[in-house]
Amino acid sequence: MSGTEKSKAHVETAKGKVEETVGNERMTAEGRADQAKGKVRHAKEDVKDAFRH
Image 1 (cartoon, helix red, strand yellow):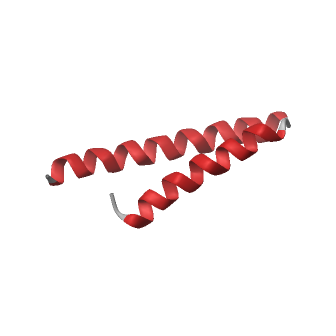
Image 2 (spheres, one colour):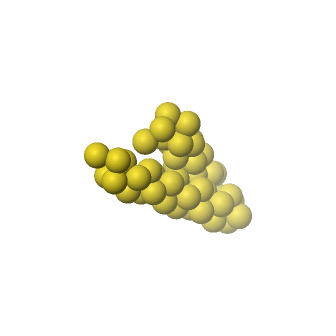
Image 3 (spheres, one colour):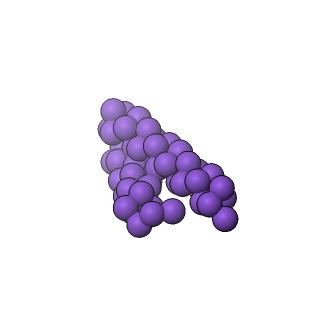
């Protein structure tokens, strides 16, 4: 996984967790969406890594 993509995945996941804990319904939904994007990005990079080796 490239460093840039890895850091983006971690930032999205962390940002999502923070937004989710705020309590506002909109922020909670955005937080869950950001977490999902981070997990998808992470999974995509894991698949790319698997085919490189």
